[in-house]
Amino acid sequence: MKKFFSISPYQPVSGLKKSVYEAADNSNLFYNKEISFPILSVINAYAVDNEEIAVYTVVPEYQNSKDNYEEFKKQIAELESEKNLKIMLKVISVEYSDSLDTMLDLFQKMIDCIDENDKIYMCVTFGSKPLSIVQMMAVNYAYRVFKNIRIGAIVYGKFDHNSKKSVIFDETSLFYMDEIVRTLAQNGVKNPKEIIKMFINDKDSEV
Image (cartoon, rainbow, N blue to C red; front, side, top):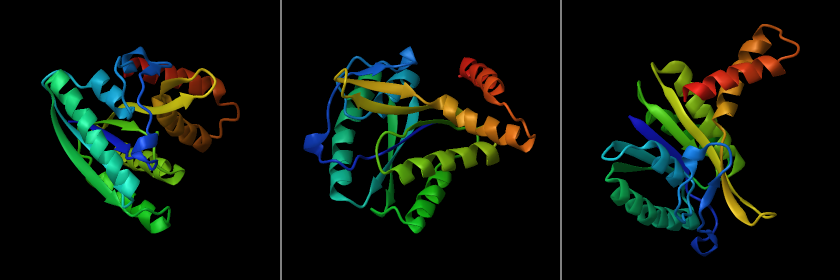
């Protein structure tokens, strides 16, 4: 099953900008609609009409995050109707904290959401930096341990204060780069840049 993961933002709903995200390096991610949550661009790009998907949102025990999740449900309902999708919405509840216990809790809860043969999509735009790191760690673990896990896309959205535009970046290559770096380091490769580029280009062509 295709599973989509993201974190509910910390900022107040009133400060959550709605805009059309330009696709920086993956044209599939362009969604010609004003949205507040980049994961919607991912769902629009990779969920097929009439498909059943699961959408998991990490919602810290913090009122802004809870309020933003309510706004997210409204916006994803519009997308669900547009594409005639069957979306199973799931909440991953965690404490509003960057403590080690909270990070371990999120790590385990994310792993518990993933099954063999899943295709994973993830947005690392919102939440604290530790939360985003743990998201990546959980997906990395599942990719290594579970059978036939595929990585669809990992994205990051931002507002560019120079151009005054919102942009969505495909960061999937960084996931594969981590895998490659581990292998090269184990084999004592001293100048890994060109090998990393070669492997990333191969992986990009597979997605």
